[in-house]
Amino acid sequence: MKVIIMGCGRVGARLAGLLDTSGHSVTVLDTDSYSFRRLPSGFKGKALVGNGIDEEALKRAGIEQVDAFVAVTQGDNRNIMAAQIAKHIFGVKRVICRIYDPLRQELYDGLGIESLSPTTIFADLLKKKLES
Amino acid sequence: MYIIIVGGGRVGYYLAKSLLDEGHEILIIEKDADFCETINDELGSICYRGDGCEASTLAQVGTGRADMLVAVTGDDADNLIACQVAKHKFKVPRTIARIRNPKNEVLFKKLGVDVTISSTNVILEQIAEEVPTHPLIHLHEIRDKGLEIVEVKIPQGASTIGKALKDIALPQGTIIPLLIRKSQKPMVPNPNTILMAEDQVVAVTDPKAEDTLRKALRGG
Image (cartoon, rainbow over all chains, first blue to last red; front, side, top):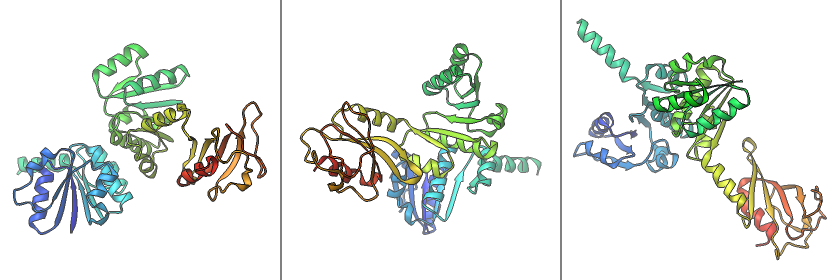
């Protein structure tokens, strides 16, 4: 499948590498080209400088043709906004974003935005580890 | 009215000040401690320190009874989220967002923000109005109908001077409800009205037909 990943931090870069290895066509979008250093050396996908909350930048990244969009920048609000653009403006089939704030995640869950909260997931994992 | 302002920068500060003068109940939500202190010192204790995008903050300041939330931080994404949380979680009847990127206007509307103010657009329009040679001035936009009201000034020497309105090929769907002529009362023109130099023609038109309209009225 074709995927756009917004935000080339540790998670974004790692996900890009994993998907690329599995044979998917990956485009990574980040506002800072320095972030692309995190991509694995054999990465065959595209890396574009651009802001994922800008419709023009998303079009340049080929959002009209992708099957999935993932927003994993550091900012919850940027991720949510980009996810909504991808879903409601461009009609991307699968949209997932990262929301650190569990309360905000709950709200957007109700509004039909699929998200993961590292805060909740990681806290749960730690608790399980400690209690095991 | 109880109005919540998210963002205590310059826009938030002066907005709060003028709304307080009008007798409204105002609360500013601002992240920065120094900004909060300045506001509380100068405008009275109206600033709450916190993140206006967080539901817990909004709950603490009684957003449920707010009549309006205005998000005026410098970040479009933050303003969008603040408005959406207010709207969906706290059922605030009216949300207003400041936007930096004029393109976000359409997007924010689609995503449920009631009103957007693009400071960039406002400034551009103000400048356009003040430039005397500017051929076409935007007066008002009727967004949901895809229409706008514009003013076209007929310059000295225009090839359309002396022509009747019915002989001018206006773009389809354009109507001219008002004509303002120097030292005369404003009038509703009819098809036989003859254009004169310095007439101010007010037209309702499709934004896409702007150029055609300007050329039709000013000649070339």
